Length: 308
Image 1 (cartoon, rainbow, N blue to C red):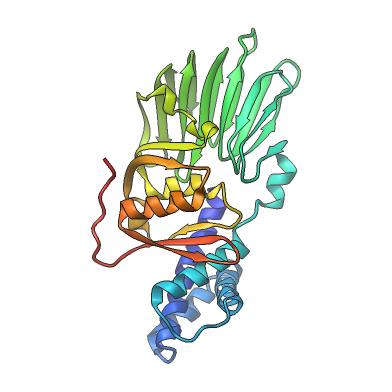
Image 2: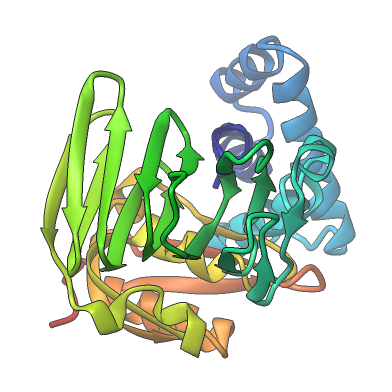
């Protein structure tokens, strides 16, 4: 998810929590003051709160019911209305944007790229320079060996190769580079990592970069409809599955989003994948029809444990 979408989703999360509490105790002066302070933060906060209210009305304005159901409806529908579609800017700057299925395409350089669902790139090849920018999602690049380097720009990094097969994938707080063949150089500011076949670089602003071994067969398993993860945050997994649904999958609460998960998920059936993910994490799933949006929220007091 892009930083812009993350910020909007966080606003929806906060707006929904205030909205839910006011539905239960509408005359609570402290909650009313909290709502007013939230709305006073600016246009985006007011829009987020309005989307939650609209989602509630579209659901039929049910009488007071369980908090979790209300959160599912309000956030699920609000997210679908607010953050569910790619921005106009993305369509203007990208040369290839995928929907809910992965697609193969060829770059102007003649090199191949396989874009995951919900991904976007710009092909900047010109004057003998082979260059691509990854804006959203993930992509596997099959680069022919040549005299000119092939460069992928992702966030603040440059991934440089001469001829190799590798995946670059965005994460909510960083990115990964996984190498299937050859060697890839990744430059971030003054730091450079050389990532060899069977290795993955994971980078985020808070943790920096780490390189570790991987199973090559698990790299970009989405190409065969699978997602194989080891010790990955639940929020990152939900983001990958989210690319395959029309609405939005919303993970409520940072503790749940940061729960580390290991497992194998079937991406050909996103709803089943979310149910499995929730079961592993000890969470619950609510479906915000008709927008195919999902809210996943952990039960109070429930303990989470990773799949082994």
